[in-house]
Length: 196
Image (tube, helix red, strand yellow):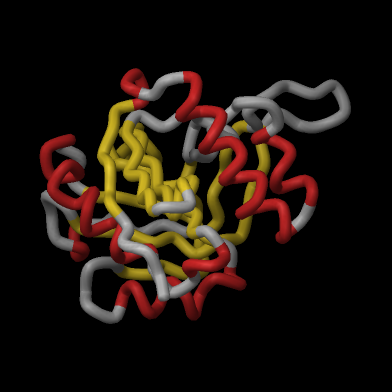
């Protein structure tokens, strides 16, 4: 039997050191099984991977952090159009709670996304997560845009790597202040910063 999850919405500057330590541990355990490289950004007490979120929704239960999603307002370029979005990322659910779903955390965050003033929320996910994300999109809360590449800067500069990378991903778009028909067309999204 699953314990009751309570959701906490918090701004980044409200987190205490103990919160970062607990979240870093959660991300290492959640992302680590997908590859040691995926857990590496969360070494020590770092609770973010690339860009640091502005806002987080954290689900807690009797065992600690159960789920997490972060948001960051930023301008992206879709094709030739500059667009303000609330980028969503750092999504995770503790393995013993699979099925809790991204939709729960988004529904908690949704009213705040409206207050942020961004016309769309945007996230990029790997193709391997398509079935998972399609379930979330079934109720019309979001739309998957395929055949798009996202160009991002790396969070750190390395002498042996280029400063940017381009990924073939699925873009997940949530219409917040404007209808999905207003989302610009384009096959490349310039994040102009590191991914969330």
